[in-house]
Amino acid sequence: MRIKRQPSGYIMWLSANNTYDWAHRVDNRWPCSELSNHRLCVVVDNNGICDMTFDGATSWTNDIDGTELDAIVSDHLPTDLRHLWPCWEVRV
Image 1 (spheres, rainbow, N blue to C red):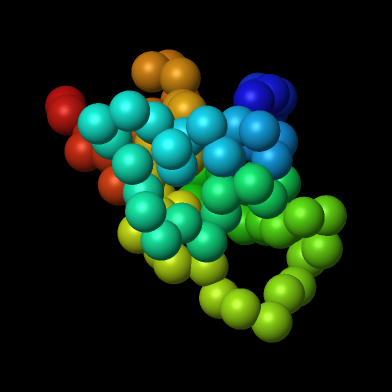
Image 2: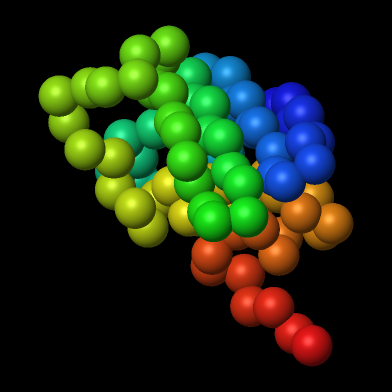
């Protein structure tokens, strides 16, 4: 997993190994994962997700489950960037 911080957000790259390992964790599996063993890149800014590639393509025939996308990004996101991901509660 790699993250590039930008002034208004970040880019996160997850390799096929990253997504496979995440979906097959002991006692914390995602049994019907659509992302497992696939490459994923998300671009997030102040407005949320603004770009995404799946196995290097910007479009694909099957939609990715939003719940799984939220979970995998959340699990890999460093604490200082959580305020930019919509499923994280921002506490004031």
